Image (cartoon, rainbow, N blue to C red; front, side, top):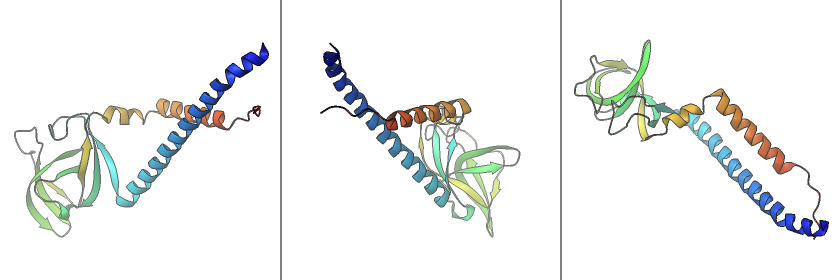
Length: 175
């Protein structure tokens, strides 16, 4: 009877081993992609901006995440969507409507959200802005949840368990 049980569990163990190996390979590839994106972000000065309001809808609806690259303000043009830092307040991301003045590396310009009927109340003056390269709607909540210590702890624990399981010594199977 033990021989019968042993032959029945071998295919199950092989399947679990293959599934575990596949998961480990996928997570390794995902880890390499994450490392490459971090390095690329640092080298190319690229980061993410999350949108909580719909002032840029329908182009960038609330709940979107945009990829932005920091550039000198002298490089922006009318029609560009840029993020500008504001003292004591959250940054604002709107479309450039007019370049008012260029004074060396400092640029003064007006902006307006695509969903807004009027331009922003006052012009902005900046030396550097973050140019929006593209956006993905509906992923801001998921990205924000990755910043939670609980979520990061659970992900770390899950990966540690998977790696431990993958490298745990096993008795050699009979051929």
